[in-house]
Length: 234
Image (cartoon, rainbow, N blue to C red):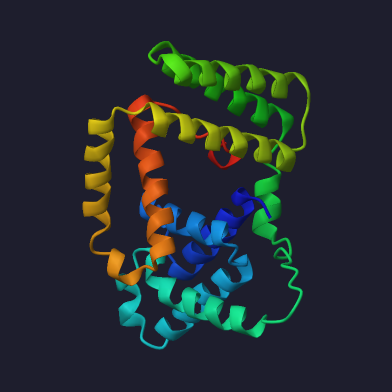
């Protein structure tokens, strides 16, 4: 399961159970991505969300307190720990969740025209960022632009394209980190640490590190006006 499907399944389940559309925060996005990178099966995340809201339904007055997917984190971590313990000694094969109507509807958005429009838009956005950059970052953005143009000329299946776009995103993140002024980078890290200070005691070291890195990547992209390439943003 690619990141797009992983994220949207979790987002849709949370919003459905919450009963009100909420925009997930950057911290929510970072938390979901940390689960995906750790290999937590999507079915465990979904079950954790369902369990939390099943309990809340017995006390409806608590619903308004759930404004973030982070509210479900402890339940999900508990289920994941139990699942890991049950897999000791097994040759584990993680199966993707079965397709849901919501996922199938989302898949219909991936028409050739919608993908082409998405790629053309990010090519234009990257051109603006490239014109204001220099050195390795400028060269990297030029390379990515050329690759994106090729993806328009040669049709690629959405899932394979998403893998390629994710690889480009990782490369851009890496170059942004190396290219950032050390003083500015230090200031950004201090800001992120302060933003996460209330959440840190509830996070494992690994989750904290991944969340921190994802938030830093987001800030660096915002500073450089470089969009995410993923089809999630289509």
